[in-house]
Picture 1: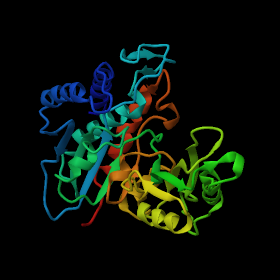
Picture 2: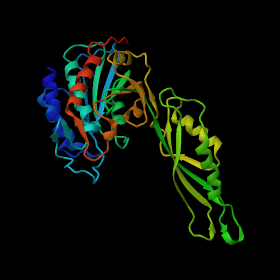
Picture 3: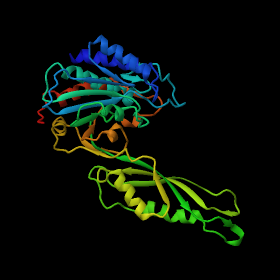
Picture 4: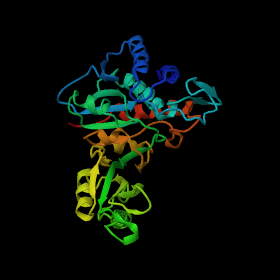
Length: 354
């Protein structure tokens, strides 16, 4: 059956590549996947541009596992030498936008789901094929999770070379404003907001949060944009700057924000605190089984829909993160076969108590 699943997966991925599916514009690729599901007699529910499949062997007493990956892509850069929407096979590689991030994970998880539901497992199984991951949108996984039963553990399909990202950094973007007083530069009047901002910027540059993550290291803060002043002879009364904060599993984003506001004098506004860091306990049966299959554990610096999973999760998928969002993106065909095989070996017959 693995050969059939592999053949179906490659065919479906080619179909997906040929349909532009930018974030918030996934409706056509959803319809293409629905055609495949109906051809294979797989029950599904459509929620906006998301698809939900639930195992027929559902029992409330069992724990519930969520398999998830996304169908949206970034826009293709002008550096592509191939047609990003024409799936092209060359020397064992399949080229096309979204092939690596994260189409290969979508089709491999779907193949594993088809295999796993043939027999009752010790857990309930949900496959969520979701939208808007690339923009952390509110109409993707965050919206669908509100409609699902309680989830005990999640697997996010992203290109990790089928290794296990047991922790992932979160994200906060901060808009900061230092307030001074305007004055004439020639008379040394006013209070220069730039100088006030520099004091806080230096704090962002030097401050070390006391807790360090075993997998993700330190919380990282980077001032990435700054803007002040209207003309050369006016002391500016405002200085705006932006801080990119990459958080770890040692802190919730709100805790980080509270520490920041206690230590700086500028006004600080977080654009969102919802993209928290994630962490999976390494004694969880799925992690233990993965290690038995020689799947290494690591901490991931890149953001995914794990940030919106309010339950333990791990990121695993075929492909290489370094190919994501690049020109001439590709997935190796043997990576798809390996992804299907490893997902099945990881989850089939898994001993897991509620």
